[in-house]
Length: 54
Image 1 (cartoon, rainbow, N blue to C red):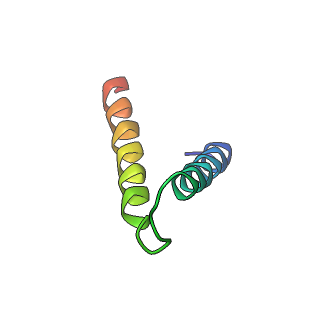
Image 2: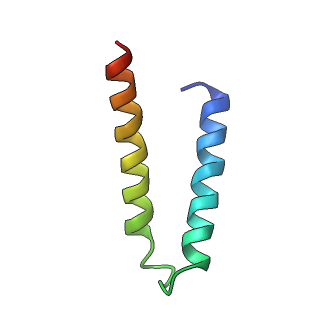
């Protein structure tokens, strides 16, 4: 990933975390698990795309 892609990813992750926090009844200590799950899914998706392109 280049710097621009990392910047976009960071922005997307923060927006997703904010949306999750605002639209859920979860306490701040409880939403780390769904956020980590989203990060894992994004990573897996990127890996799958790279594998398909190679």
